Image (cartoon, rainbow, N blue to C red; front, side, top):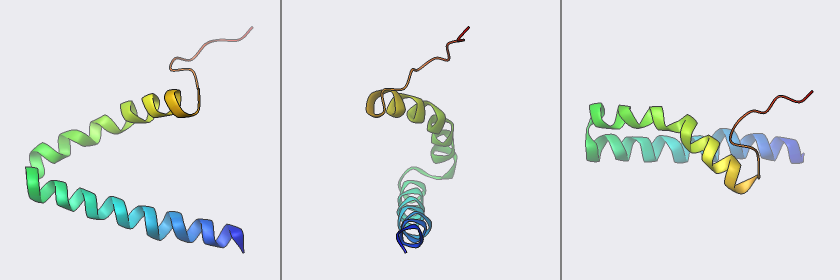
Length: 63
């Protein structure tokens, strides 16, 4: 049951929040300016994972 609730939260809650904020950004900035921010997602993901999860920001080869 917990897995079902997690899937529902991610599928409905997070997706709905993203949809609403994206549409708000398009309304405020316009489609062209907003589409530029989609390229910031990987950078924000790396920075967030480094800060919150303490993951390395660069890949290191282990021997």
